[in-house]
Amino acid sequence: MKSRFSPFVAFLLAASALPAAAQECGGDFANWKQGVSAEATAAGVGQAGHEALAIATLDDKVLARDRSQGVFSQTFNQFSGRMISAYRLKQGAANLAKYADVFARAKQEFGVPGAVVGAFWALETDFGAVQGDFNTLNALVTLAHDCRRPQVFRPQLIPLLKLIDRGIVPADVKGAWAGEIGQTQMLPADYLADGVDGDGDGAIDLRGSAPDVIMTTAKKLEMKGWKRDQPWIQEVRVQDEMPWDQTGRSNKLPLSQWTEWGVTNPDGSPLQDNGLKAGIVLPMGRKGPAFLAYENYDVYLEWNQSATYALTAAVLASRLAGAPAYDPRNPETGLTMDQMKDLQTRLEARGYDVGKVDGILGNNTREAIRKEQMRLGIAVDGWPTPDLLARL
Image (cartoon, rainbow, N blue to C red; front, side, top):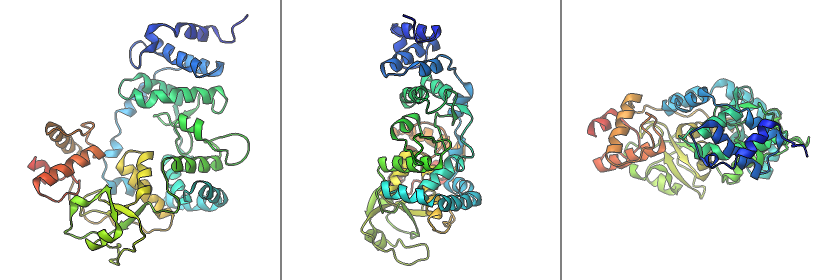
């Protein structure tokens, strides 16, 4: 009986039983692909998926991009000022109107407001205009073979091969350098499991169909924990003196408590108690902008773990929902990238896990800063300053 696979794919399938094929990452690339091929066979991937895998190659440009995400070294005011552009606000409003019926269906079915979906749509690809030009399979093969974060990317390979095998995406589908596909940059596993046919044409096209994109994005946010009819952030004004150690996203307290400590609306009027709890996010310290962060804000961090990106997306969503521009205020001078690396090195020496000495103010570094501020008896706002660096 003639094999239904090409000779090279048949070779990969036969060789997949070799012990070397079980390697998690690194090593001989051909042997590593044999392991992926065996995994794909067990998962039911057919000929089209195997043939795509057979010709997949490593891409050094992907590795270079993975190791140089300097954009997140910008401050929140810098990053959000650049990303929340007049163009995105104008196009966002236009798309909310153009697809009003689809956004209404998404909110009814998944509970997610159109402005929230629209913000991710804007930030990820400018509403589909810039979806990425990396070969998605090559990107994921490269990142899964690389031993820096294989646990993140290896689980995306089989779903992508299934998408290719079923004809949902072409074998040479292009997207972002980290393997995301479509107008809101969905990972293959999410595309495969949670894609929604929003336009009713019998297919799920997250690259070309706006209704499919809107409905799928809303579903993804609901699955990440979005709570229907609840806010996500709210700009506030904080006092010069207050218990700073009680601030932070995760320390959610009743609004009545924040009111007691002098937190107000930006115009100085009192907060209206909505019965919910929220933390205070100070992206640039106590002298910078301040926001109440409700439970729905945590969903933004489920989407992207960068606090700067997450808060920018939340603020853009609030702008699309009608809120005015936030007040950047007058934060204390921060650190340069080299100074941040110096600070992270010193924090590591004190036993803190900052994740990586990369000059980026991530959640781990911010929490370490708060603990050191508490130890030193200074305002606990998680903002690194030259004074803090000198004290350490």
